[in-house]
Image (cartoon, rainbow, N blue to C red; front, top):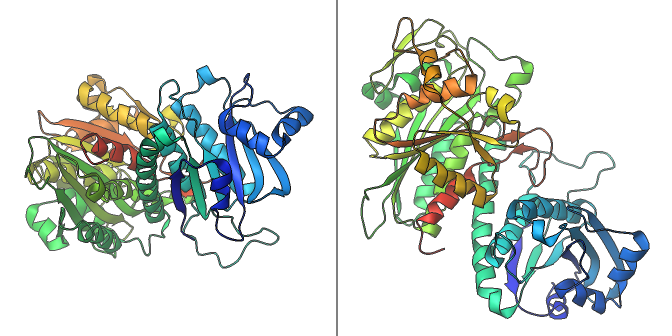
Length: 519
């Protein structure tokens, strides 16, 4: 079922009358604690002859932060089925991130408790502390789409007594006439960002038997094909990688049945050509990670189809370029391959030469992602001419020890560029935190028989970031995002379903939007 989203300045009764014939809508109202009903909430209360006030008083409902309540109208109002109240707490304490948390609760309540198919969501038509109506509309749209997402599973029927998952058919944003244009702008951005995130989720959730390097290549080709000529694609096959000397990618894929694919997407603003700033996005694309000969245990290997979550985020952010048309050149590189176990698999003690010419000693075959990133980063800088780099990788389990499974770890070598991106992440509603890179830890990657070892000692997430940084050319700005703990969920969390989260897609999209004049 495709979700229809629109914004209107019509009155509530008019919005209800526009719901598809024969259907009924649920109304979502956000209310603040310590305040009387006002605006759309007051209008809805008057429309229902004081039903909301009576239920609040009778049930003792207090609109504390993320407190919800579902009110049944008994079908007494044309077109209106249920009213869903979501508490935002005190008005002066509400932040944009707080609003997103409340929206996740509101939409999951609408889905799981109220069984909503058609939702009407009046916006608050005043600028609140720290965000605008446009941002409000974007957040409502994003979280409506994200919460409505159901993993692309292969289930053929509901489990036992469980009913089928409810999905939204329509979401209508209601606002004042003087904010309608800005609300629609926010709605457009929210829809683009959320749909891109859901496509990244789909990629991560697909079994590795089908989400192979060849499949990732076909997705990248479609992105280029659908761009009306704005995005060019280059795909290197295994023989070409050997000729170039991509020792990292070739070592990781040496035990795999499916051959690797090295993909680069390129965009230059049509009116400018290649720009002085060239943004380079690198996504780790290990389609399945067994750990190689240093095999993971059962639990560690269970979800390793998600080891290409970085590639999914990068590719789906690139899919938005035809809509955003940023004013800077952008490159995206994915070294797609499998890390499998075979007689030809890389072994501990092997010495390899990366594309940059630096040699690496294989001390652990499960530290494979940094090997592919090494070749990808060198390529995107030397061939792609990128000088502002962001790599997105499910790189270390240690990042979860540091930040848990909600906050993505970020590392950088340029404070200004890092601050800029982290602001984009905050604006996009993706929690990220910069971790330090003390020089003292750089030596942990010093090799015994080669320039570097791929399994340095010390704090794992920091040591891994230092390894990747060794392949950043002097003078180029670089950010590393370790999404190992945030790229996949075994249980639902907020608007995240079980499976791939699509993390970093919206942050990258927000960065591209900074350079856009069309959205």
